[in-house]
Image 1 (spheres, rainbow, N blue to C red):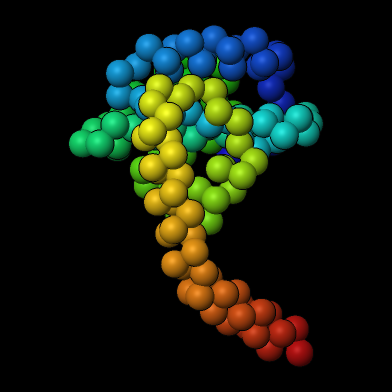
Image 2: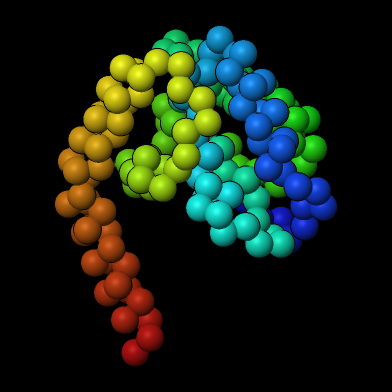
Length: 145
């Protein structure tokens, strides 16, 4: 989330440190960096976007709180967004898979299986997303006229 507050230090070395910290966490299987930092389009108001796949059976609410603290302490900022991949929407998963960079990958088989399930969800929900887009466009046109 952008809070209109500049990050006053270079995060690139700290992202490497975060990678090591998350590799040591037994509940974490996969970590992606996505958004402007992953695409090399860093600007003064950029935040860091991180997506994490947790082991099955982990309480994602508690773990997200814990990870938020770890990430904040490691990056020395609260200018980041944390996405738990286990709970992400198909559209966001697709975006992360396509444009994100893998920081941690503890199990390639789990990554591929999760990727395939995410792509299937994305394809399966396409008609609903298309319908929602058409309704939104109609509402905008009606509002504008």
